Amino acid sequence: MHDAPAQTEPSTTLTSSLAAYRRSQTFLAQLPDPRVFRLRWITVASIIAFFFLGIPLLNAAGIVPDFKVNFLGKYLSVAIVALGIDLIWGYTGILSLCQALFFCLGAYAMGMHLSLPEGGGAGGIYKIPQFMEFAYYGHHGELPPFWVPFRSILFAIFAGITIPMTLAAIFGFFVFRSRVRGVYFSIVTQAVAWGTWLLISRNEMLLGGTNGLTNFYRPLTSSRKWILGLYLTTLVMLTFAYLICRAIARSKLGRVLVAIRDKETRLYFAGYRPYVFKVFAFAVAAGLAGVGGMLYAPQTGIVTPQNMNVEASIVMVIWVALGGRGKLWGAIFGTLLVNYTYTALNSDLPNVWPFIQGAMFLGVVLAFPDGMVGVWDQMEKSLKRGDRRSFVVMACALGAVALFVMAEALGIEPAFLQNPISSSGKLALLPPLKYIVLAAILIGVILDFKLKRRPIAETGGI
Image (tube, rainbow, N blue to C red; front, side, top):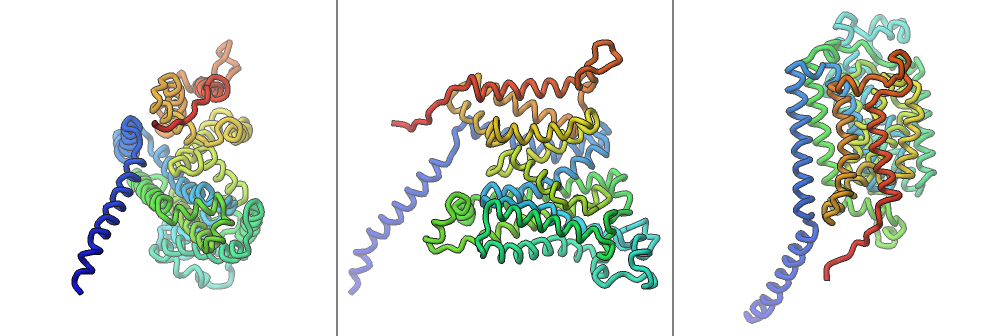
């Protein structure tokens, strides 16, 4: 009677040993090349040191002005929205054109608190926002009932996250359960964003109409202490959001999301209900957009319905496409690149920006289908093969773009790069030298991609 366990024990031991061996082989197979691993860690450590230590120290030393830190904080807050877009578009294959709506819901939640005396609105002089003296006339200076809970900062934070997530979950449940997908889903979300924009713009909504909410606590955008504090808070939240999205993408849940993107029909035959996972991803992306909006509002000092129109959502998609979807860091990099290009061109060449924006999108489609992430991947492959020429070309392209973003972020560009090129010293015939250098490097990379780079087959070991 006592011999059975002894007979099954070797089998159990063998099974556990095989399982451990398979896990070790999977782990070893996933380890990158040592040179690639070293490159990644050096890059990550440099980025962390630059954003968490370098910028605050440079700001404290007076090298980087306060308004540049404020700009960077705003762009990092919208990068949180881009992470959510990459999660639902890059990993799940859902192209949503209403993420700016969820972004504005979070911004309005925080803006409502900041407009009240409890949030320092208008210096605490008025009991209610000034526009309500006219829009809510005849109520003797009382707040509308739905404004009252926003006197609490905790409720504003809670509402800024839960309202976008709840709305996305309810909307997504009915749409995804009806198996609306692809371009049809994009059109539906575009219509929702447009309709909500029209609704919020009406004065009857008591949200400031087309003028939005403003007159926030002034030191938020003028005091170094508040500017630096909001920047660091945004940076921490962006890091936290990245780690959450990364954990989702690398989990079994993330594999299901990728399966939905690649072949949703097979999941139905496997017994899954894909719409449940779609609703989850859509709600998480909406929550991230709400967090980004709450951090954006105090750093701009104003929230308007213009931030939630369809164009704003499309621009957010361009950020992710340019950075490279399917890799979370690409969404962050693309957001900073597009926004700083917009800021620089609006200052130097304001009439050129619409053409540059279109050229960016066409360039991603025609030359860099994987965005900046694709350039990094090619650089890693070149490093593995020992192809120094290709590695240097890719590194120069990414380095030039990164230096451009860094210089615009810090405002420390050399003077000769900022001055327009002219023939007589009076009439500028060409744009500033920085744009010419950056364009020349990118054109060289495109030529290397299309003309000079020979395809090399990836072969396994013998």
